[in-house]
Amino acid sequence: MAETEPPKASIVQNLIAAFDVIARRVKVEDAFSFTPTSFWQAVLASWGFGLFMTLPFVHLGTHFLALYSVSSLVSLLLYALIVWHMLVWWRCSDKYLRFVIPFFWLYALQIVLFGLVTILMFMTGIVLLQIIVLPVAIWILVWQFRIARGQLNLGFGAAIGLVLGRFGVDMVVGTIGGLQSTMSLG
Image (cartoon, rainbow, N blue to C red; front, side, top):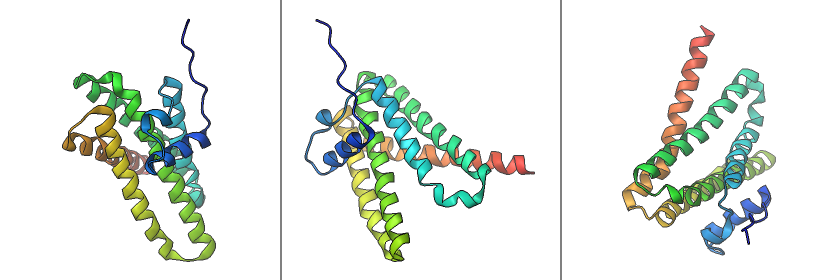
């Protein structure tokens, strides 16, 4: 009998699964589907939530939104590609989806939680609510580190490098996109 692919979870179900993972209610292995379709769902959800967070900046114009849209998608895909090549080099490419899918869903959860706190801040006018974001962001980074160590059997330094590499890719792509924008404006 041929194995069938597990049913596809919705974006909300995957966000709940990511929350359940960081709340230690479920193991990473049991929380997500590790298929190519799930990979693209995680990438597009992370990208979409990131775009949603730019809505307060609509007043900056369509050029800014288009530049952010392209650079954020390029950043996600470039990070995924770099991780793939690193895992091929380390001879553990078979574990790629088991790392990158939960990693991107935790990233998406971080964006959603940041968005909720931002909305609450705007609704209440309490700027100190931003302080709530810091421990949540740190906790999600800790879990991304744990996923890198657990799913890929990496050492401490390699796992930290893999997690912090995401910020490096964001900075490089953002800088290149900003430079390109500046050069095209004259």
